Image (tube, rainbow, N blue to C red; front, side):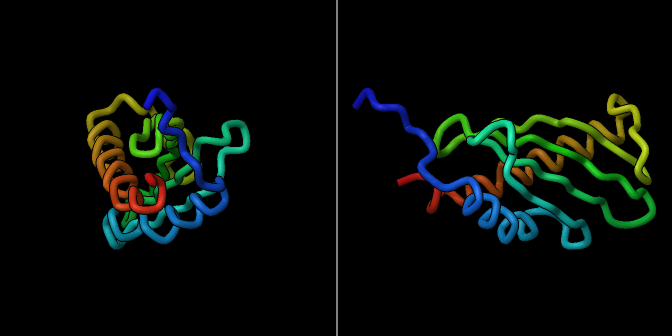
Amino acid sequence: MGQHDELQLDQQQLASAWSSTLPTTINSSDQAEVWPDEADPSALRVTIHTAGHQDYSFDFKVGYVDSREVQVELIDVEKAGQSVDERTDLIQQLALDYKRHIHECAQALQSITHH
C-alpha cells in the first residue's frame, strides 16, 4: 500500500475534462479556459474571465498533488489586459471564490482522476 497515488490521466484528456466541467462550477456568466501546463505535466492552467463591467481575468495554476487533491495557485490578475494589484480586498475575495470553484471542479472530476 505504500504506492504513490499519482494522477494516471493524460494531461490533454484532463484539460478537456476540466474544460467541460469547470463552467458548471463557476458563475454562469463567467468564462473559463483550461489548457495543459507545458512546464508541469501534472498541472493545468486555468483562466477565468469575469462577467460584466469589471473585465478581470484570473490566471491560476492547478497542480495535482495526487489523484484527488489539487493545489491552486493564483498566478496573475488582469483588468482589461493590464496587470492589477492582487492584494486588494475585491481581488482577494474574487480569487478565493474562484479557488473554491476550482476545488469543486476537481471534486466533480474525481470519478475520472481517482481509480
